[in-house]
Length: 46
Image (spheres, rainbow, N blue to C red):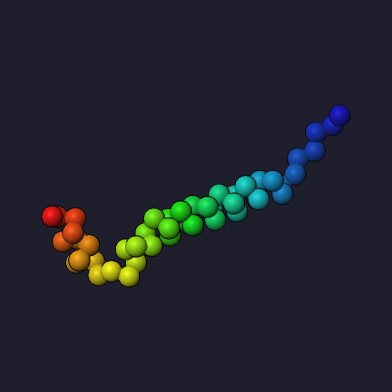
């Protein structure tokens, strides 16, 4: 059986990985997005 390379799985994997990375980053920083930076820094110091 001859091997035939297909770019579709490569592009699909890259797209899914990018989307999951962006989604994970957004969810991890969701609670901080609406707060002021100084408030966050003060909370970290104490």
